[in-house]
Amino acid sequence: MAKKKSIVDISNASAEVLEIIEKNYPNGYDQATNMVRYNNSKGDLIVALPIETDDTEYLVKVKLVTRQQIEEELALDDLNTVEIEKEKGDSSDNDDEEDDGYGDKPEEESEED
Image 1 (cartoon, rainbow, N blue to C red):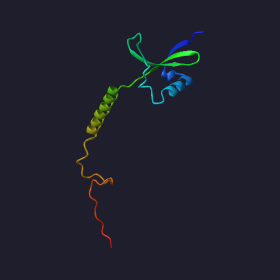
Image 2 (cartoon, rainbow, N blue to C red):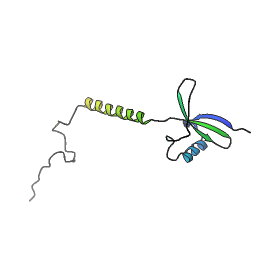
Image 3 (cartoon, rainbow, N blue to C red):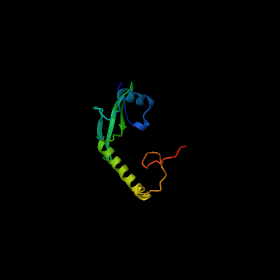
Image 4 (tube, one colour):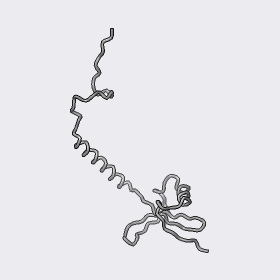
């Protein structure tokens, strides 16, 4: 008897399928050489891992994050941080800040008897 074939998103995969993925890809699946890539009916690129159980062949849809996407996200985070700092105002020139103990202000000498 032929195995059943199924396409499932990784977020909806059974515990059995997830265990197989963890076993087959202990360091993550982003460098897997057997990934299947195809376009769905909407034209979106789908990336899936072929996983096989005793009775079913699965294509488990996964989301891949490229280095470019990571760099773009980090750049956006940096831009947002700069904008937040601008909104708060630059306090680096403010001399009435309390001493935070990091040595950026000189310590006052105390007199001992």
